[in-house]
Image (cartoon, rainbow, N blue to C red; front, side):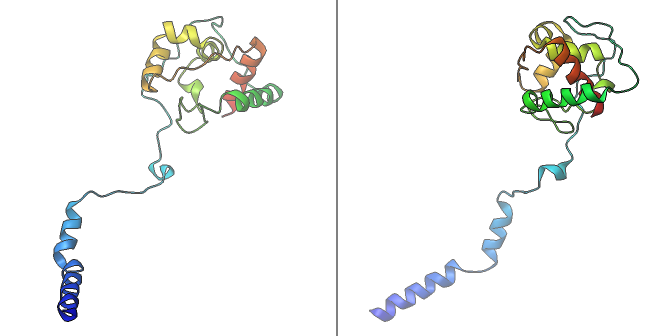
Length: 161
């Protein structure tokens, strides 16, 4: 009886570990690729069109920055940005919100400052803000209630990116 059980067990192992058929079946199954996100080189710019003529909705209009960046103001803006914006924004990578490097190549300074200071009004009335909201899965930019000085400092910091 023991010999019969041993023969059955060995037969089962031989069949279970067997040959080419199993490898062919594995090829038909689903395959997973494990590549790092940085290997994919995610696009920085969003699919929303560039519009430099739109100043947005809010207190700022027809803003022109000086040619030279105010490094002290930019440092204050960087500190504010790191405290309240980095949960949703990075310089070169899309997150919950758009990547902000080169934002002034896509949007006017007034539009950017209005979005920083008045995201509620912008998301209700501005066509670009509405398009960005749709593109970013309806993730609403929260109003941080920044002062005019803080808004300008963050805008200055964005010029350094």
